[in-house]
Image 1: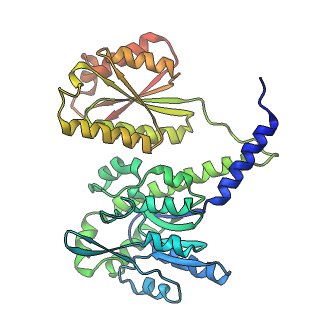
Image 2: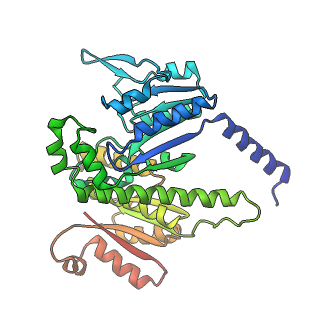
Length: 386
């Protein structure tokens, strides 16, 4: 039976109404500290005020940089809220104060910040989501190394384990993402001139995170991320124009296969998320096959907690979770892949010497490769090393 056109029209109108109730989100994305994200936030705030827009600085971190401090002048700044934690008075963004004040646009710096325990939300990005849902538009900023799906790449590039991270989905939902770009030479010069950190910290920064090769790779990540988001937005906009047919999403369906190995599962999940974005996949899944060796009474509480955290990570990145109890891991993966029409299986393999030796001996990944080869279906396998 064909759906009633009147119902479809009502649904479209409801989506429009709901969209109008939400604020807009603009994100300035940089390659590292010191590229000028906060300065750009404040510049835009001044420009909006000149056009009669009610703008409020909800949270700004100047780091004492003279140029940034000067830009704060003549802009309405909401006082920070004091919270007491472990006997200390700490300052946080006054989320309730912003909602009560209800500006048209609020500027919120340091998007990846973790809030003081006792705040309404654990993370500032959750504050931003809340403000947008309340109909308040937000302009914010973050560095590329804080993107959840890039964590493993950033760790390999810089050696830094970035603990404050934001879900990629937040950037995908943004109305606009702007790359705040600076050449590696210019950024290192700013650092050497003491425009980013205290002069005492400069030699250590130059020798570690701010090495030229590190910054070059982070710059590539930032440019690529914004390019992918822009491409997705162009396709979406084209879908609304009757003269242009919007490219449809691919039929690719990705299936990430994990076990209770915490680090391996994280890397597989993040890599599959990136692949799903790159392929514009129709869907992607995370499959955990619980064998008799991995029942709750046979693995430790820490392992169980890491497993739950990894499944939560997969959900945040947009995956559908599949949990199956079966001792036949390879058979279960093959069956689920067929049920979900998976076109790409993503599995893990350790970084040991003799990769081909690993693949030639018995093991889940090696057995799965043989099963896929014997199956005859059009399925590819992507190996993630950990």
